[in-house]
Amino acid sequence: MAGVQNDIGDSDNIKNEISKELRDKANEFLNNKLKANNLVDIVVYLEVCLNNKQPIIPGLLTLEVVFTELLKRRDFCENKNALDGNVQTAKSEALIKYCAWLRERYEDSMSLMLKAIDSEKEFESVQALTSCMKLLAAEGKYPLDGAEAQFPQLRLYNILQKLLSVDRLHLNTIQHLKDYTVNVDVVQYCWRLLQYNLLKKSTLKHETFALNFLELIHTLPVSKELFEQNKRLCPVPEKALPAYGATRKHINKVWNNLMQCVGPDMLEVVHKKLLIILLERILPHLDKPILLTDFLMDSLDYGGAVSLLALQGMFTLIQKHNITYPNVYEKLYSMFEPEIFHTKFKARLFYLADIFLSSTHLPEGLVAAFVKRLARLSIVAPPQDAVIILYFIGNLLMRHAGLKKLICAPNETEVSRDPYVMEERQPVKANALESSLWEIIALQKHALPSVAAAAKFIMQPLPKNEWDLSSVLEIKEDDIFDQEISKRSKQYAMAIEKSQALFLPKNDLFQQNWCLI
Image 1 (cartoon, one colour):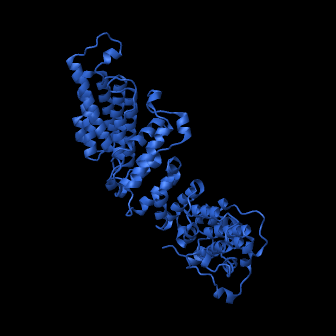
Image 2 (cartoon, one colour):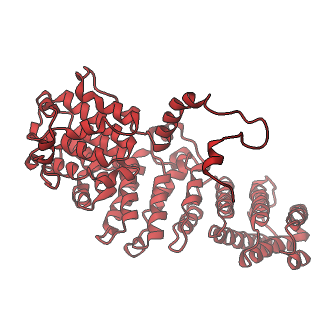
Image 3 (tube, one colour):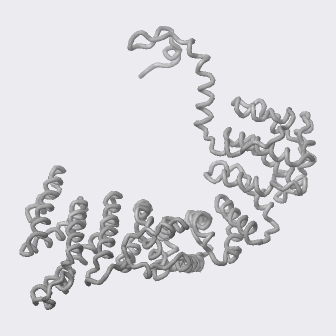
């Protein structure tokens, strides 16, 4: 290996040669204990590559194969002969030292693989994680001490500790942990280990650690299907695996620890990620979700996407746990600002607003304020959002017959003296019932036919059935552009002179108005 190390980096083509030499050395070692120094060479090779930021995958894969084979052969076990049925139970002193030496090399290799997870190259980091998990699985099936199969919790703890780095963001690498979280034992032991020493208030203040920690939680699924399938990475005895109830206790412990570490100085990106994971992953498994009330109410005052996500959490508590929050409509009303249409959470806002405003027993002044605010926003909203707003306003008018008086066509004087107060934060005081929907009439002259057509509903009898908002919530600017182009393309198909050569046809408008430099 010395000659190989001296030539590292001289040429990209040497990678294949190194891989071949590593394979040869690995085979020699596995077939002959007298070639033990070959293992040292491979370990040193990986260490040199790590220190010099050179390709590490050949070394990772070679050590993975070598130690997987050693584990299967039980070469680490001092009582291997007894396991093999050999009547001789005593081992020679030399063989005992050899087993101890193998374990030292194994620990050295695992340390290097863990270090490799911090590689700046994502594919190397992912491969290091994969190699660690494969050796973890092999060690679980063939423990070092020769005992029956057991899950190597310490190995998993070391892996989690490396992924939860304070200095390096491992989001993409953590995503690849999903390849192993289909196994119920991996999920259960991850939640169990996350309770201990992996989360501290001081570390949560670091954005990198916080995002790594939250991404790891988001990667751990907990579902009935997971427990029903009972797929395992390590074939441990049935009695050694706790059921969902025990795992749920670990989840609650982890989340309670997390809430204790959350402070008022939490970064917005962390705050947003935490709420998303709470809503999408954790909330159904909490024993006392009402304890989140104060946190969610404080988050409602944060503004932007954080407030919207907190509102969704409050809605769940109101709907399923009978929590009362008297100012919920004022908070929802205040979230309809132009900025919300430039976030990916706008669909959630319309979804929540549709649910909160679904009751036909709401005061007309309250609903009218929402209708008027939406109408005012439709003037400045992007075209695809203006269409959503128009359909939503139409649905609200269908639900509340008393609001049809807003549809009257105003004259210019009435528009200039619109009594609606956009700046009023309390919807019932915004004078919406004294106003009219002149904004929608104005949109009937919108440059885009799709927006103009959607606005024409106000001059026609309202349909009996509400519009399905889900059909327009995901429409993007490119979709509208493509629709308009497809409508007009046939009009211009015959309005060009077909080119008969490499050059543009004569009298081409492009040539008349543009020149190539």
